[in-house]
Image (cartoon, rainbow, N blue to C red; front, side, top):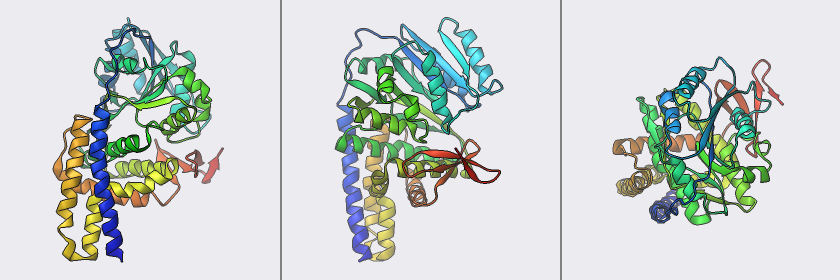
Length: 379
């Protein structure tokens, strides 16, 4: 009976891999119109500390080939290590309007949302690009997303990202998963049900759409603020798309402890943001399912190379066809097994560690800071 169940799940995962390939070609078939009248854009950059390559990342936003834009930065305190870099770039690119805000301690759990809220209040323009500090882009980012927002029905766009790993094995493993499994899931969801959510470290949105859904105050208590932003916008009748512009997400070179904490945080957050979708991630794992089926019945060993072949083809199509990311084939089986273990772990526990602080996750995706002095929830 167990073997039959595992083979059924494996068959479903192979169908899913085929859907991922179809989803890639459906995504690539959409092209934005040529930009006719560039509208001004406000770039919002929340910062916290000295990310690897921070100066190079921020520099790419100053070097946009676009007629009118501004850049707003926010840090929590004046002593933040990112401040000297921002000041240096402001002096170097003095012809680009920019501001730096010192926000102080956030009054609610999501510090990033607090920074965005402060910058949003000062931003001049309706079209907003909200981008994390570990993002690197080419000079045509703004031109590309502006062309997509010529559609008056469009409210929010998610930029796909190509994960760029650091030197550590665990960083390379995670990047392999991001560039294959993660975006396979997003693309299949887009194919099957449409984009009714937003993900990732760079999101483009219209100010009026944010205001219509209740502003940053509506998403301030959620850990996955990007996901719910897109979800609320779609529910309000606004168009949400997966942009044609691919950014670079530099994830650094973390060791196993930090990498595991990050992945576990991601899993626990996803399970609460999208419960059915999280359970369905089992179908994205043909290789582990094939290994389990073989463990239950060793005569089924041929399904392991079959599952890996199908998985590898889908991974190649997603990583190269959409992201233009190089794929290290030998990492795939290790990443698949690691992802399976983290997926199981995501069903257990309701706390996460984020930037040195402990938080408790609620069932609806909201989260609260835990006071480590007496282990009570701080409201």
